[in-house]
Amino acid sequence: MKLDTFLVDVYNVFDNDIDNVDLLTRELLYGGVVSYSLPTRGQLKCIKVKKFNIELSAEDLPDLKYSPRDIYSNEGKWFYMDKGNYHILAGIKSQYDYVKHLEGIEIYAENILRLRVVFELLKTNVDLGTTNLTTEEYLDIGFMVLKSDPTMVRFDDEMIRNSVSNWLPIILAMPLYSKIPIDIRGRKLS
Image 1 (cartoon, rainbow, N blue to C red):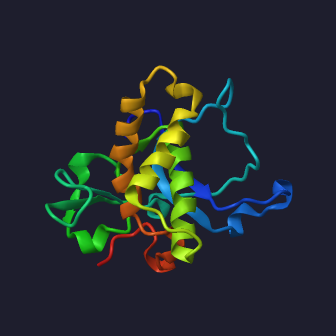
Image 2: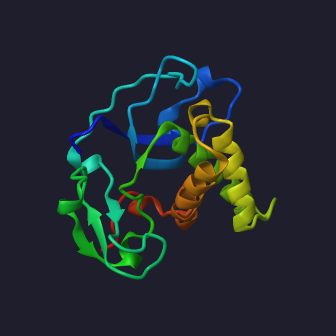
């Protein structure tokens, strides 16, 4: 994308003994979102748990979706960016039903990655039937998540609530990663 961005997969790992976890065999909580470089120093940081090398080619990169109008519904025109060619002008016209399970082209900051983790865990619990949440309750929880983030101290409550309101429909519209059939994860339906 000609920016300092990365494709970030988030593993569904909540074990006490993280040193003995084989990430290559673990399910993803969500995957293939575009993110800025993650900080490794300072008050907020990402802790490197493991390092492993995987040879990737363009064929291994996921397709991402884009809609110039309404990213929350099947209305309007839908496009997908094919295997790492992640810029709007490379969009290939498609239909919502073929791309609805793909991640969007949005760029996630570190605090939004964390917000997404919280929302995915909540969505999992809703799917399991252990809890039931309204959109307003998601908004309230998301507000608390971002409000507690030290990078958000310069923003007032209204701005934080608006940020959650902007991201919530995108995140709730995505199916749980575990519910997407393996053969179409990160791929447009034909």
